[in-house]
Amino acid sequence: MSRKLLDSIEIAALAARTEGKTSDSAIELLQVFSADGKLLGLAPRLLCHRLGLFHKAVFCLIGAPDGRLLLQTRKDGRLDVAAGGHLSSEDKSSEDAIIRETREELGLELGADRLIKIAEYTRRSSGRLSKPHEVNNELRVLFFIRLTDNECQMLDNRFKNRLEKKSVMAVQWFSLRGVLAACDANKVADGLSASIPHYLLWLAHRCENVT
Image (cartoon, rainbow, N blue to C red):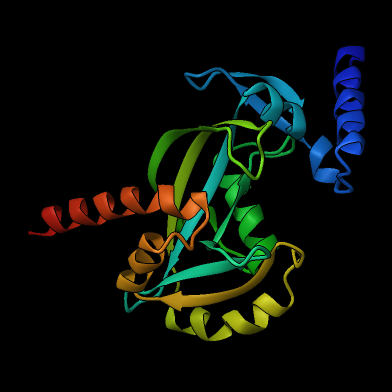
């Protein structure tokens, strides 16, 4: 590990302590990219958000055979995409990252061959009241997986044995109408509100291809 990288980790750790953060996520190493998607290297998560460094985030919408979508309830009470997170230093691809996140947050073991890539898009945000110092520039990749009836029935048991129990409090199935109503009522996290338009476009395109 280079001295430059060690310095950046130490700076991030100091900033985290100054802000009263106790989570190791502040110094978690993320892959950093140029605006056009070229891999540049690694940087601590806190510095990515303070300096506006482009990093990748992956999300996965999970559907049931009857068309419902699985949403997770975050610790702040908002609804979010079933699984999602950042591309870490150890992930070799976006597919690897979302498979890991799905395992950690939902307890599901899913193969990469079942992933359907819906969209890739850039999300820029800054100046939120809850995080006034954060500048978040993300290159996002959105996937979709449809579970079988048997997997839906086994979901509750798998979810109880998930690894990530601090941020994901519960999961629940919603009709598409229910998801849109939650978005309209501003009861959802940014990952979900930004992903749903891409999901709707994907659904429309599929219908056009079928007809």
